[in-house]
Length: 161
Image 1 (spheres, rainbow, N blue to C red):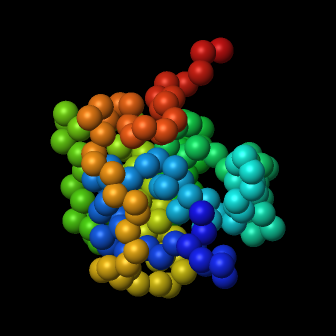
Image 2: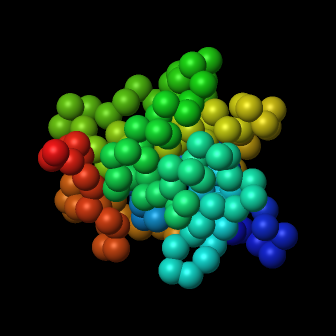
């Protein structure tokens, strides 16, 4: 859901991005932060490409893609981060990555999502505020592979041909 009636995207902050990295919000919340910046618009039952959605996204995904659950969407998101912004997680959030026991596709895709959001801010010439609105707080999921109640299952492998 967009942050307010003026269709402004949800404000980003260092604390919000850390909340996403710490898996304390739903995958849907994470996707919506990216969808709104890619020009997708809320529609029932699924967000759809809008006039501001870049054609490479709108053509590939007329309906907003599940960026955490679906591998093709996650790969496209990764590839859309400009090379000069690939290290923003480390540079701005001091994020060194997940430990070996914490490496799950859901979490690595969340890290990609946060890096994309940082790159988006950098491309807009906007600073990253320390504080801002946070997402509805959830405890980290008991099973990080499954995620939070309501999160879509993560497709980690390529579809069989």
